[in-house]
Length: 128
Ligand SMILES: Nc1nc2c([nH]c(=O)n2[C@H]2C[C@H](O)[C@@H](COP(=O)(O)OP(=O)(O)OP(=O)(O)O)O2)c(=O)[nH]1
Image (tube, rainbow, N blue to C red; front, top):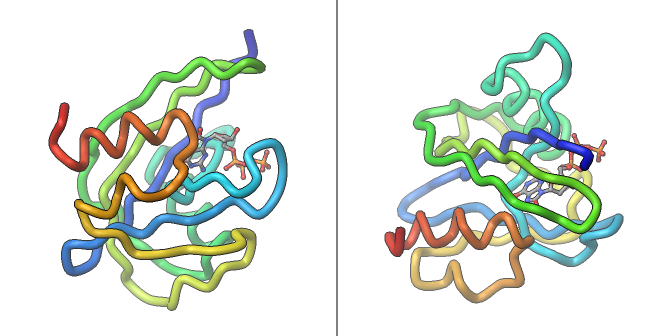
């Protein structure tokens, strides 16, 4: 099966987490943590900073590794490395996503996450 390796940024501010809604493609309208595929020669941290610059016009610091999630989708196997991050500069401009919101721990369950992200959310709310 096809393997995809991605990095995802869980951007935190004042006890809230930044979630984005996909504006295109197979998973349109699902919620995710922004990020994307690691390119050849990039470290995970470099890939994440580049993706957030491209998608949100924002510079982040990659603060702490949270978890790696493995998830089987019908068409591929996903490995997703998740990091807690914070904004260094920029205003999280939505260049690719159709919507975004800040969610506190209690609100994390209120949006329709991509399958892999359900595991990440469990980790964040302390169920795992
Ligand atoms: N970025 C991101 N991708 C996720 C998450 N959860 C999840 O299942 N995915 C899946 C959806 C996509 O199939 C894949 C990442 O693709 P992507 O579209 O963000 O990556 P990309 O921008 O580098 O690639 P592309 O659109 O050029 O194909 O991982 C998540 O929280 N964040």
